Image 1 (tube, rainbow, N blue to C red):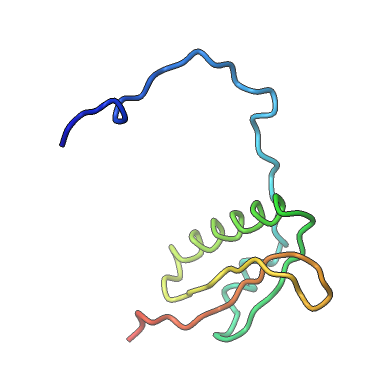
Image 2 (cartoon, rainbow, N blue to C red):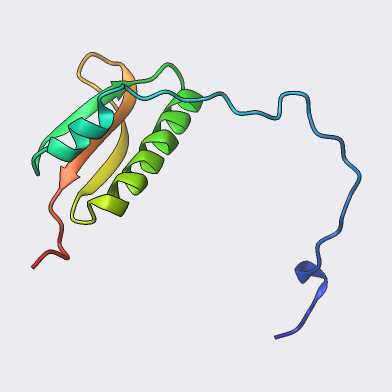
Length: 102
């Protein structure tokens, strides 16, 4: 492997922006219990306010699911951005079958 210019990182003196912190995204307090008890084939929808909020909500859900799967590796989920039947944008979480299960 060669060490070309694209492999070299250049350190720069660029000041940190004052708004460097992301907004904290909160999930419903019962989200972990809901995910643990959710049957395969069921889903739920969380409404969001904007595209940016949808991205933050999706990331928070993915993080929570990964932490949950550390203790419950057989639980599998799929997260999709969508607009519900009322025209509200948001995130839908589906419980899916674990194809790795015996």
